[in-house]
Length: 248
Image (tube, rainbow, N blue to C red; front, side, top):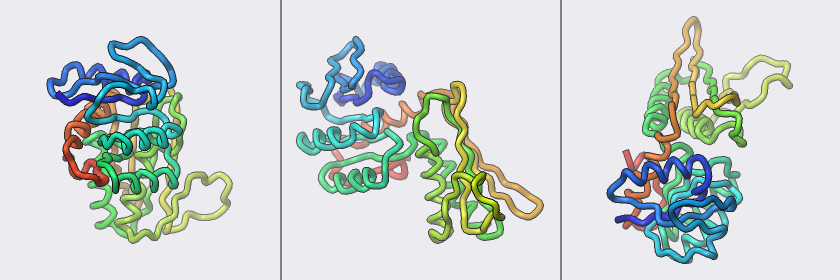
């Protein structure tokens, strides 16, 4: 049985992961870390320094502010970690990459199999359509989401930009600009409202035709399931940076 430490266990995603883990015969959440304390069927610590359980892997669905303590604990105890939190700065992402030289880290902006398929399709479309089509990305999430644009939208934009030779700038806000759209840009638009779990659409707009690729998540379970699969995959792996491309 793989023993899991769940960071952010008292949050909404943490609750979903725990619920799914109870149906999993190979993994078990045996403790958690969360600044918000709630009674759960396992020990919940307010900091990593208080953790007393021996675990096999960490799953993180918390907040970017927890990154330093999370990585410090994982390195000190030589434990693999699945990082599924979004909203990291570029500096924090570089720290994750550097730490992956010491321990195995699974890091992705989205743990949904469907989103990662969407990313692959977007890269193929960009390669085929090239400069003849403008690219716009629209992402929609619930009204409690803090970061914008979503990490997934940035993942999609980066994948398309890489395919196009890193020539594009990301345009987040057009209302302050009084000029025509340039060819070297990818528009990214964020919508926040209600209880939308997560929707992403990529538009390739050309002359007299528009191609749309989209993905919609109906529940948080698609992300929780991906996190548990990633945790099982990561145990026993050597130090390195892993993502969905190795899992699917």
